[in-house]
Image 1 (cartoon, chains in turn brown, yellow):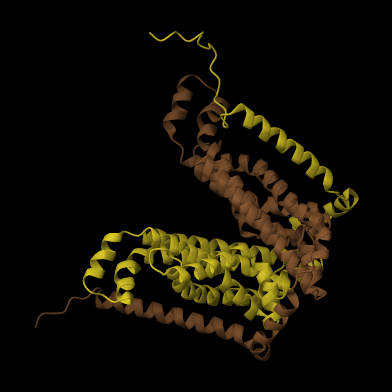
Image 2 (cartoon, chains in turn red, orange):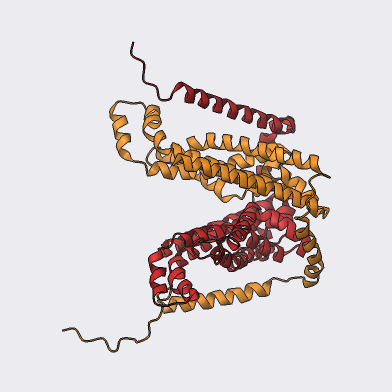
Length: 264
Length: 269
């Protein structure tokens, strides 16, 4: 009797089945954790609630528009200034973290990598929660929290770009007798500048989205009005604010896509 | 004979990043005007900042002596809830993103379905998680259920978009080969497309798992469950040592998750 062709050996097949079983158990356990803290009456009531809410949201309260112009501007300022500040702080970190430009691979590189990891793991909103208690509520807390989270993003993408550069060009510059700084300026920077510009615009676009909700924790921008309107159950205002946010996000995404297409 | 150039410049100058001098100056001046007006429009209460600085130092110092114990139960509960939300939302999100991604691939689906799926993806990607969470909390009540739905919704847009793009660029030879055997639509998708996108789908799911955990840590701010509520309370009470313990746990879990998923993704390639 000729054995049938089989994709896996018996052993790996068993391992695959056990893997699926463990995955299913983990899912069931997670579902249980969520289900036991859920008020199911509210969940079954959700369609009625949603219909009621949507009914109240229309039409938007156009008269509220003048009141959100300044917060909308603050939101854009927070994203832009935060991105600029992050770029300023992240550039040296990226050069310290890149294996080929780091002045000290054993001592300074791990510090730079740790800064990047910490900054990236903590969400913008958590930075904002923290900074609001330190510098007080307002636009400054927003700018700083956007900057502190973006450092990690910039640092990681920039140091990877620096590590991927073509070494022949830096060698050529070094062969002319250039100093370390000159090698950096004429050999490394021109190669990574397009990436820097592209990544900055991309992050700016993300930061517009993030800064729109920072006001929920008191860190300035249009989120403050959003939160206030939701808690006052002023749904027509909420609709208008959401339209403003969606407009800002759409415009920033368009600008960012155009700029990135022009660079590449 | 071509005329000789006037006089070759004797000093080499680095070519500018933006070639046109006109555009360069316009952009530069525009940026300067914006910066001045933006910096002028924000009012900073320097007195409040100065008063807060010692508190800032206290927070930095508390990272050296984090307090895991005095609110240990709340931290464990919050983290368990966050992990549960992350796991269920990723599974549900991936499960729902696959049909949406198939629908949003131009080379597979009819025009009306394509448009519906694309607009679903666009909505999910434009709305920030916290805004979605506010609405889900209003609809489904406080707790991790609303958070799980928020993360599921966000995962659908993220994964479906990237999967759709991958499907649109698949190798077309297998598609024709399978179709010429007389396969049904489902068999066609399963044998011609699925093997080409599976590695990407697994990689993206692991990546989204990371993102979902990070996001689950903030949903608690608006009452959608997870560790965020505990963190918010701790910071509100200026209990920086507890906050530091929570942040360190988040960082640790994110790093472990990122490292493991990096290992798995590297093996898949």
